[in-house]
Image 1: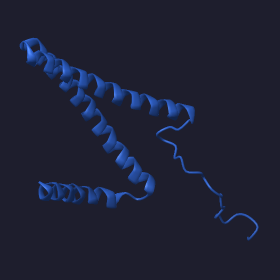
Image 2: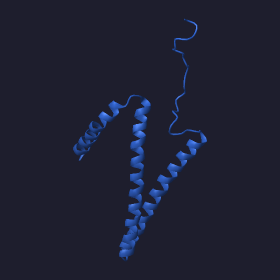
Image 3: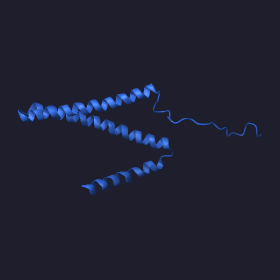
Image 4: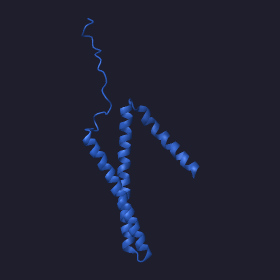
Length: 122
């Protein structure tokens, strides 16, 4: 199991390396990871909704002990959806509070140096 996990992680890193190598700056790399994490986020929320409906189907189709198992699956699905959407909301709240948008870098601008030909040294 450990060997399979290690080789799959190595395969994923090998597949992601050309995309990372083509990123010109740190901001490009962070934008690439942001795109990847947004896709994963949607996948996890969809998976939590599927788990909830799987528990609902199990609850409606069965009786007795299996009915309580369906309730438990639905409960875990609702908790997972709640946690993911709450974290998403907290991140949006922090972005609006600190006026952080997806287009502006968070890094300070630094000292501006005029490298043009006009100026004192003509």
